[in-house]
Amino acid sequence: QVQLVESGGGLVKAGGALRLSCAASGRTFSNYAMGWFRQAPGKEREFVASINWGGAVTDYADSVKGRFTISRDNAKNTVYLQMNSLKPAYSAVYYCAATRSAKFGIRTVNEYAYWGQGTQVTVSS
Image 1 (cartoon, rainbow, N blue to C red):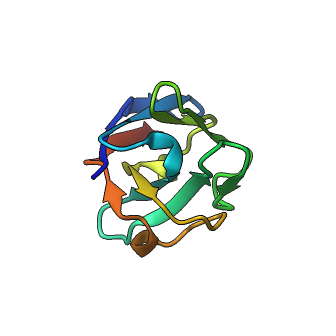
Image 2 (tube, helix red, strand yellow):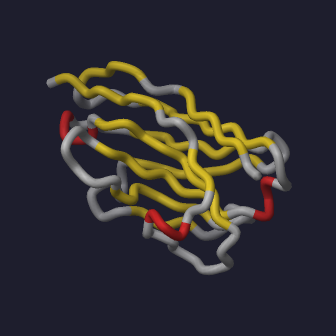
């Protein structure tokens, strides 16, 4: 089992920035690829970004490419999502997730076995 706890969400004005953190516990963090997803009210959960176990390979949804940066610190068992130039359309609950899959660029919800409880991000216009 892997336990994931997100933090760092909040209310920010359009054009602002936030950094989300996801702290992992329970198993060897570096064995897992990590992803960030988001879900807005009435919409399906969607892929935002992923990072492989070592941090060398990242993948982004087109909608956030150039604005968001995913990173990880395996010594701290933490994955981050730096979000810049935020837009109101980015308002959602953001979730981190973990997978043992060795594939790169994992974008589908059902390939991730472990999920955090989510953190709310609200971007005002």
